[in-house]
Length: 376
View 1: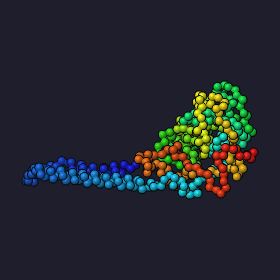
View 2: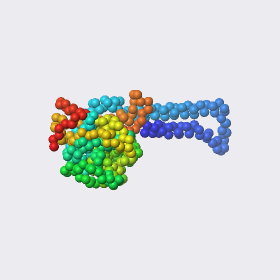
View 3: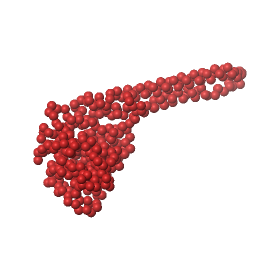
View 4: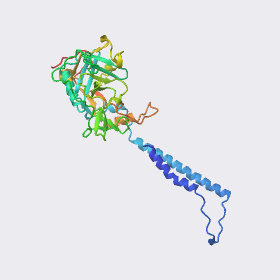
C-alpha cells in the first residue's frame, strides 16, 4: 500500500500543526506579583508566520516521506518486459508436458493441442484417454460455436437425454465408460497453489497449479479449475454426473467464471486456439449448427503418446512456482512504457502461463492439416 507511509508522515505532522494552533498559555497567578503583557499585533503576526513556516516544513517532510515510500515500493519491481522475461527464463523453469496428457486435435486447417489435468479430474481424463485411443472422435464434428462463449465438439447424433431424443450415437470404444462422477472440485489440502496477491472476485483465493488457472476456498477446503479463455470442459446435461468427456468444449470468449463448480473442467488449450475461435458461429439456439453441412469436421483426436516419436509435439509450460513466474506477474501488474495508467492488478485468466515448443534438434511439425499415423 503506497499511501501508508505518506499517511504515517502526515500523522507525524499533526502534532506540529496542533501546536501552532494551540491557544496562548494562561496568565501567571497574581501571587507572582507580575502582570502578563498583552500580545501586540506585530508579535501575533510573527507567531502566525512561525506557525505557517512550521506547517510548511511538516508538509515538505510528508511529501519527501511519500516520495521515499513510492521509491521503496517500486524498488522491487522489474524493469524488464514480459517478452524479455520469457525469452531468458532458465531451462529449469520450463515444465515438459506429459505426452499422455496431451491431446492432438486435427482439424482441416490445423492442429489444436490440449493439455489434460488429471490432478483435478482423474476419472474424466482416464475416460478421455480411452476415447482417444479408440479413435472415438475421428470423423465426428464441431457441433456448436457460440459467439463470446464456447466451441463444442462431439457426436452430432448422440442421444439427447434431457429432451428425451434417442439418437444413433457412436458406441464408446473398449475401456471408455458411459457414466462418471462429477468432478467439479478437489480437496485443497496438498494442492501446490501459487496464489496471486490480488483479489479475485469469484473465489477467496486464486492462483495457478502447474500452469492451470485455479481458484480455491480455504474455509470449504476445496480447489477447482477456473473457466478462462482456452479452458476445456466436459459438457453435461441436467444431471450433475451426466458428463463422460465425449462432448468437450473450450471457452472462446470472456471468461465465464459463473460456470466454475458447475461443470467438470478437464484441461486447457496450449496451442491452436485460432482454429477453434475463428470458426463460423452457429445459427441455432445457443450457437449450435442447425444444418449438418455447417458442422466443422474433425479428422482425428489422438494422444501425443500414441504418435510416432518423430511426429510427436513436445510442448513446455512455464512453471508457476518459480522466480521467473513471480517476475512475469509483476511485469504484468505494473505496466510502463506505452501504458499511461498501470492497472496495479492481475488475475488468473489474464495471467496465463506461457507455452512453447520444447527446443530440440529435430523438427516437429505443428499445425499440419494432415493426420499423422497412429500407433494403436
